[in-house]
Image 1 (cartoon, rainbow, N blue to C red):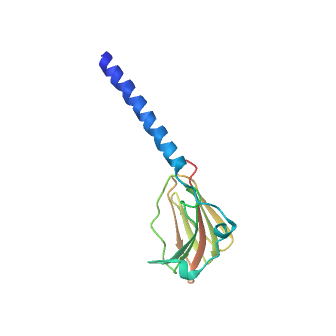
Image 2: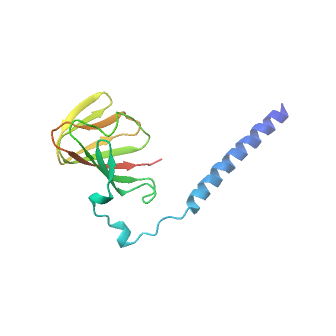
Image 3: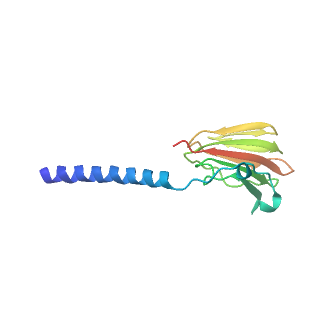
Length: 145
């Protein structure tokens, strides 16, 4: 019995040492050097990524912004970027142009420009184009874990 307790204790110590090492390694990973030049990002269509439903443009990805992101999505009429889903990060959508159908935990609402939509962590959510013109919106994802 004493051997089993010793093994459990050793396992716990090693487990926490591994977590501590992983956190230290993450801290040591070089952060980008922030300058006025790379902190200002003007939208350029030729740098946008084409998707099967339109395109997207990353103003800030998680490697640059420490796990937080800012992206603009443009979705063609009647389409969505993906099916309703959930993830541990909270997320905001901000409608710039067009008409969006917003799904959140079983309910749907249609909204227009200058509307923000909040998705709590782990809530099932989705957004699609409910209009007959392109839907343009910002996606702000925050990882607060």
